[in-house]
Length: 189
Image (cartoon, rainbow, N blue to C red; front, side, top):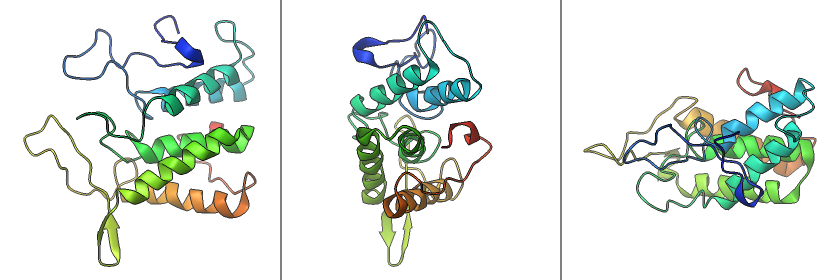
């Protein structure tokens, strides 16, 4: 936390120390940003840790979510910024984290943001007849448009799981069933 930016009530940590040339100093995703960092604080809260650097783990989790909401995602502001809609590095994973926070805390702005992320995922689907897939961009490659993936962290399986969860939440509200997974069981309501 000593290296974190906590301006405006948020929380982001540097992506890499020292910063890497050609990469944003911070990221906002599950693996390198406040979406993933928020999971740390959810785990500490669940473990009964009362205080981290003078604040409760749940207060730090709220700070992470605030940074997500004010970051500009899911807009693609420049090459390399939010070019992925998968679970690990993009919109689906971040949306799933925010849905868990909403189901545990009930803050309306979290649900609104999770639904905004879901809308972006649906809008970015590449449709061919009855089929859909998602293509991500790696702006540092000679051929930046990546082929569609089918996997959990970087493909259709993980994105579909997020969208199915959004539908359950839309139908059942905060009590909607959440499937505990090995990577986030401690953050589920």
